[in-house]
Image (cartoon, rainbow, N blue to C red; front, top):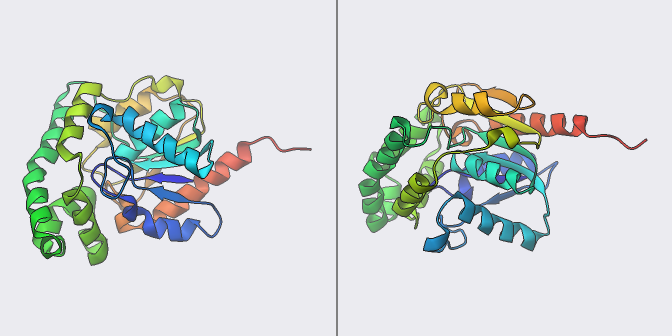
Length: 260
């Protein structure tokens, strides 16, 4: 299973989920191209398609022609692109981005939210771990992505700030997203897919950003609620995410034809 993180983050947000799943599955938590610690992303490749190109190159290195894909936020949007290319054996989209309508108020709200947070990220980059370890820098970011900020460990919060403050494509990716627009052709999704929505996601809400996905995705899509968590549920309750991923994989396996 391939695990993809959200915008400005890194593979670190999955570490507890990897520990849980790796006893039974081959798991790869990848830092996506253009993000801190991940493969480089050329300016001309900015966007979901360019990120997916880079991920495909990494999958080819591992010899993974196809795999189960689970992505959160931007990672979920990239997951839909990998599904379109035939690289996803199945897909789990956890609070995926791209559900808003093109040039809608929500599209600009989300972009402005990231833009307004950039000065904090820039200062944190200059100050390094002196900032990354301070609650004053952590709080605005963690509050955006968590229902219960106290459930996020200090180490995880520090690594979030490290990733956000060192994301090379922070501003340019926002422009690329505005250029490329939201998810399209959702009715063409054929891989077994679970749309997992956090109960308390206030960043990409159901009414404003997810209902279009629900309306346009095919009927075979499973909708799953992740209880008690916010936009990046792995930070608060990795156990509930790992359990949901296991349940998805079991459902997919049960639907596969068995040899006589």
